[in-house]
Image (cartoon, rainbow, N blue to C red; front, side, top):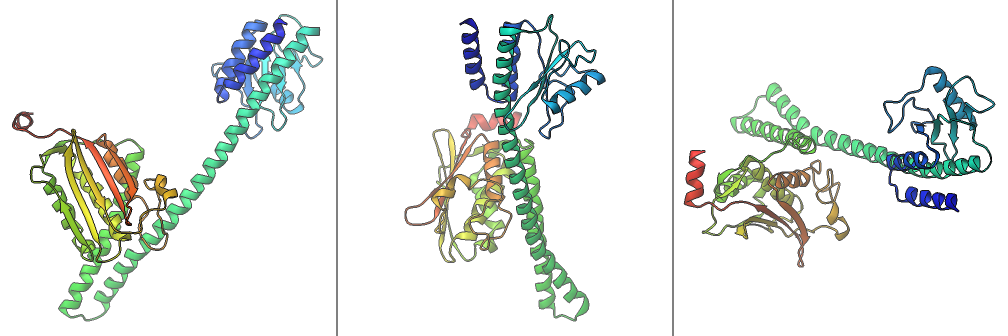
Length: 386
């Protein structure tokens, strides 16, 4: 009855364990408690090759001869070593860990005497329970690894195709305009137009490179907001001026209250956030429609909203809007699908949040809330002396 209870508790603990390491911790503890031996688990690497070190017991290794025997046990699913017919002159008894689909590995123990009768059956049942739990977690890890590789491959192909497409257009523009300038006689107005084409294409290339660098900085955790006092009107005017050509087909309505205080933000990061949100609206909103940019301050937060009259986002895709490389329509809008992901990263660098919702009458609204101090005379004077 005591052994039955022990096996029941072992099964219960193993079922609660999540991950191979947790299973091993339970296994080592329970074997210590019930058999007074220190088990050494040697597991395979996922490709049926046995590692010569413990996953949790990295300080332990087998001698070359012991490892050779462990490999034999793993491949033949038979125990070997001390107290077996295949003793081979080693102090360990090495047991296979059986599995229905894969064998997780082997376990080596140093026993004072050979296990026989009920004690042997008890031990064998213990190992089966542990092996089943290890196999379960192994298969889970392998499935996760396959999903990760599939996702990595998909992202690589998406990135490669997107970059190839995005590079091809400005490079072709620069090459074509340069060739015309070099090989034909052009009027001053034509020459100026060609130079402008080259400049515009160069800006597009620069934006592509900046987006790739920014997403790399965000993912590596190298983004930190350098806060200082700024007038939101300066921020809005700077972004609107940078996008004056892209915004020409639209009506941009800016709402900033007269009593809007100075706020403490990283001007460069927030400039990129607004730029990315507005450029997103220009890519999806119909020409001659309205784009609204509103800024306010409430409950200790700067609140920014950007809304448009575009098609909005499919409800099923709202959760993916801020993911890397996400685009609704592969053919309509250019870019890598990094702009909104970068905006989210830069907002979070301010300890803020960004959200998206569809509007009832069509279009979408991005809302940003950033906790920030409101400037008063005392704050500004303290800032002057810092």
